[in-house]
Length: 385
Ligand SMILES: C=C(O[C@@H]1C=C(C(=O)O)C=C[C@H]1O)C(=O)O
Image (cartoon, rainbow, N blue to C red; front, side):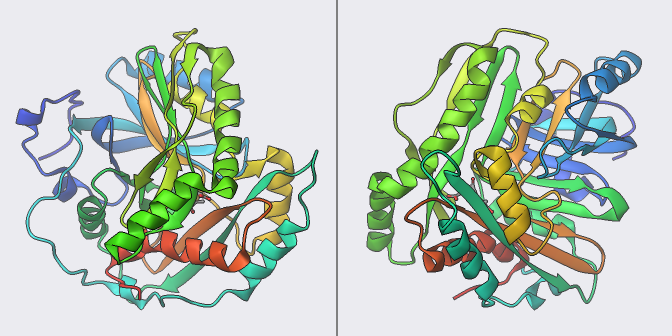
């Protein structure tokens, strides 16, 4: 198949080709609740919250109704995102696993499991001294691991495994500058806009999954009752509601979170939805307005960002930003870019973070980040104890 012609909203029965087999490096692929989209880009756009409306108005006026863009936002608030103008797109239902599971034959397995990280626990201990009644309430601290790849990673194969292992996640591969790719399986929806309906589904407050099923359910039940995790979660819900409330009619905010699970984590989850007052507010406008939520940054935002810059060893880049796509009508889906790897032909970097609030335990937060690494490590075929 060539992706010469823009095809839009292809019904499932016409989804003739396997998008995973069609995907090649430099394409954008995302499979999530709004279905899947595979786009082959022509030009690239770099734009931030200050200029995206103007740039996109010009772009869509020239490229027409069937055009779509896709891209990534960096973690840094207000930073410019990297987008591709998709010359051709295929859209279909959410991708499901196809064929038998295959072993990964590439160098991802070189990633050492359970590397010690005294810097991270020291950073959490330091953060715990910074909370005050009218100051910092929460900060999300992340750590990273990297490895050199003996040979280029087979991204199609990694995507296939991520789809198999994470059937409800937002699975994506997005092109980054300098030939790099951000690939992952995020459980978290920053924003979806469909017509005038907007939905955000923040996650915060987590516990690793446990191999013993009885203990696993007991841990999940304890999470739902944990005062520390409920506080960590409430900070995020309040901020998301504060941003969306003036933009929506009748915003629905659940009174209490529910549990969601991935292969490696239990999370507290809240679905916040409303009808947009301004039909011109696009999914990307909303993503820029919401990002970074306290799920990946902390609260208040600027104080948390300053502490992250002080305490974290490596630059987050496009980790803990957003990844998604938008059509000419402004509809689209943007996931929080977590549980992902930033890969080039010869190296790979992964990040994982945890929300720190008064009462957090540095060793438990370290264990939480270890468990969060598992999503991408499992995709790479690395099994952890
Ligand atoms: C920061 C990450 O995850 C975020 C932090 C969470 C938490 O602290 O409980 C939960 C989900 C995500 O919003 C990550 O996966 O790296």
